[in-house]
Image 1 (cartoon, rainbow, N blue to C red):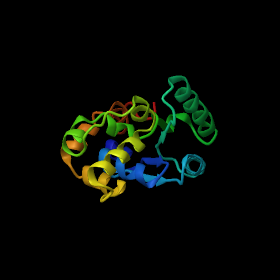
Image 2: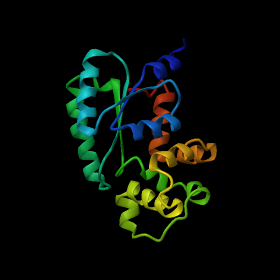
Image 3: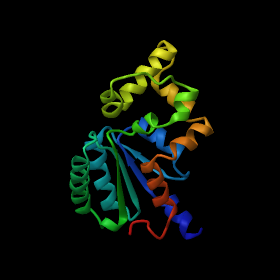
Image 4: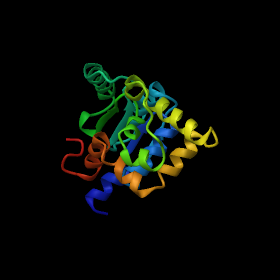
Length: 186
């Protein structure tokens, strides 16, 4: 097994919930081990326990629950300090989606062209509640005949959509971190 494969095969990715895992498992390289918490606090607590017991690389991928850059940085600093007490900071990376992972969908033109009709919604809804915005569009287009999870399963089976979503800056940074052994955990 070469060193690149070793990193990928031994990397643990901590996420807040099953939906986050479902989304990321379709967008990131294969052979990653996802650890799903039941919310942010449970994920962070579980992550810290894993860090004490395992000598693996870790990725922490969470929602920031804000779009304010200073609040995102503050959350990252607090999380870094907390996790740093459990293990060396060169063993993990933290990625935060602003405000939530579903923000990747609102920037995908192909998603809207192919599956949804972009509505003229207040900009606040699009920016501050992308998950709610997408759910609203799904309900309008499909008359609540398809659930949010089933919709995600459908679009995450579409290679054009996957490629478009992989252009998201945070997703690109995560993929680059996983694929580049020289920058991994440095």
